[in-house]
Image 1 (cartoon, each protein chain N blue to C red):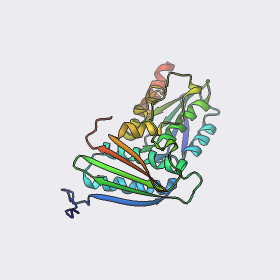
Image 2: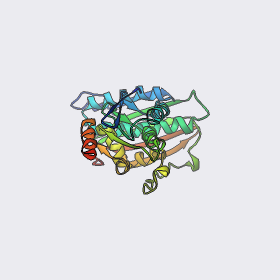
Image 3: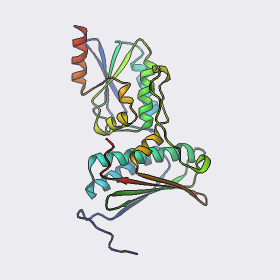
Image 4: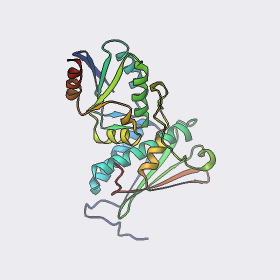
Length: 156
Length: 115
């Protein structure tokens, strides 16, 4: 095990680990901690926004689906810095992803009447668009989502 | 997420006061918007300058607010902050809404159309 911890120029630790209750207010508090950590690491405001979107969508999915019948569930969130960005690990003990795979997250057809515009189903599209690599696995009773994000990604 | 409003030159200007429009407040926001868009001027501008973060639940609530305003009213948006604008552009919802830089420019545009 390398114990250099790669304290970059900012002097920040090379990872952030959080454990949160599976509800929206706990998610808000965790996202603030993530923002503060990434800002202290020197990442751009735009990248902070991308990470916040990805984490909000991924954790909301866990709250609404994996833990739909388990309001007292817990979520483990871990961010690891790499040379070019971050890797995010999210783990929960909720229901397995349907089919055991993460949804493709295709864009909606918006060329429809106003009454038929979609009000949901954007989450996985946003996650897929803003991440460079994504792996879902079921380990025992735990779901594990691993997402790689490059800080220099140009997705506007 | 508190909403304040005033009517200016035939436009109802609604200002979102909270800094997050997310899953925690999306349903409440949608219900509050229903009340504020149920009567009054046909043109509605939602000023989002205070909203620093919007997730897909919040986006869905804004879309729902436009739908529930009905065909006689139109909902326009103003003052999108960078992360909010990103969610709208990535999902291409920026092609569905009329989006103004600010409430001031939105009201100016409405005034010019009226004259």
